[in-house]
Amino acid sequence: MFHLPAGPELIVILVIALIVFGPKKLPEIGKSIGQGLRELKKASREITDAFQNIDEDDEPSYSSKSSLPTTTTLPDEHIENREPAQVTKEITQNADNSEHHGG
Image (cartoon, rainbow, N blue to C red):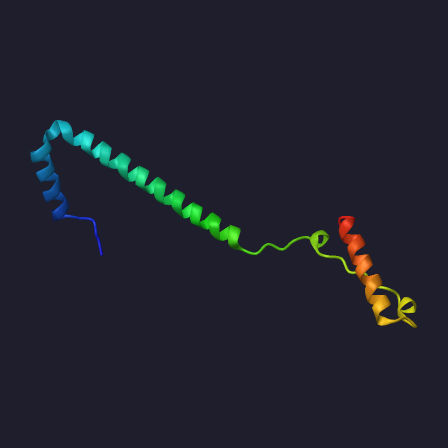
């Protein structure tokens, strides 16, 4: 992979930079490199945070009971001695009424 120079390698690089850019330009270059690295770190952190927010948004959320559909049950005495079609019709009407009333 990639590794940063250390020890003798770093000294050689600094000497070459000193010769090429001179002692007056070297602090400016160091400052520019530092600012660039800081901005790169900040952008990397922002990207990581954005991906974490996306992951959090994708997690299933559990809704409250109020948003769950309500069920209507009829007592047994209403169902006895009735035709199945009539019971189905009453259940459908009750469901339609609860939908129209925000239930």
